[in-house]
Length: 444
Image (tube, rainbow, N blue to C red; front, top):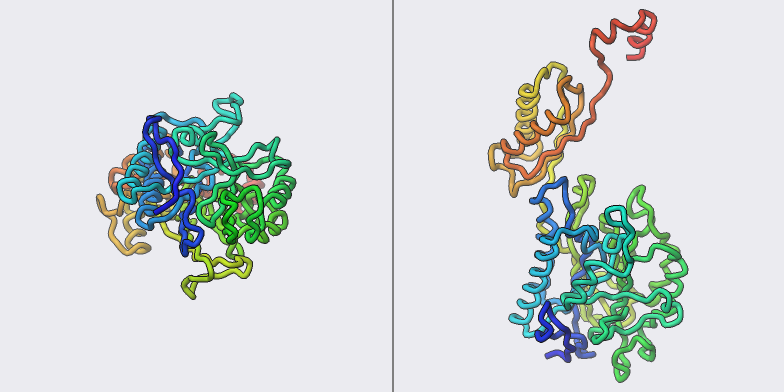
């Protein structure tokens, strides 16, 4: 069915797996998944259940790839959240990827290649206060094990050499061709970004010109669909988050059909050629309202595509249909509670919080909260306003959270304190001279 190359698989050098590196140039349809920012290894407040959510996101993505029978998967960086990785997380990741490749071989007698780049979290320079070698990462280990393909450039040689075709023997290169699709990719670029983009534009081939060094089959004179996989954000797409100016990259559109991004955890699309899907799972409480998921892209040559899909005039000979596929993420609920002044001890606070949660759940979410009533053990964020109880130490807060977690069978409850300071104790107030009392009263 495919003209395939071979790659070493797993830990056994004798085991081989086949990648569909060259589809027929006349293939009417090629499809892929685009995911990014999985942040495997994230420790959410030391909660092991929450750490498993990121592993679950990876499993879902791979299952979708099997169900959709895609030709390849793109990962846009930050596969791991840090080089400080627990052995159990890495071992679990290896098992998941091995099982995926075994399932591909069993089901399709072939492989769905996973093509990745390194994000800034994958290649952080410091760990436990020590500077690390930039050339090593856990993603490179997975690459060396044959579980994915890592694209990158040699920064010192890149301005002259440009993008080098991926070499199966040396397992190096920055461009991979699958059928009429070329995938260009580099790791996260921190310095000299404007110059880097200029070099990229110079070395990226025109989609209609096959007489270039990146062409892996010089007998094929058909057009190519160019994908550029990068890890950076675009200014203005996330409030108060720095990014690269759109002006720096807009010229790439002349040569790139699909700029696949990672880095920003909030998804966005620009003019049907720039696609950033956001993180696969929320990494912080502030990200719980972001729409997240993965992109499924179907590429058709000669405009053979559903009429409702979005077509770009710059696609020149290709049409693409982009579908956002949501993942089954853990639910997050925010509840705001106004605390009164008469909560004297931890039991009183607990009773008030429990009753407030039950009441607001019925009002805002349409169901009564009881034990095990919250679906799939969600996370509950309580914004506490009003008057801060006198006895509300960190120790008491932790005890309250533990009691409420058991009461409602949620995964976690966190407090966000927004107390006001409008009222003071009578003793403190009377200790202030009369003239200042009058000033404070007049200011209320």
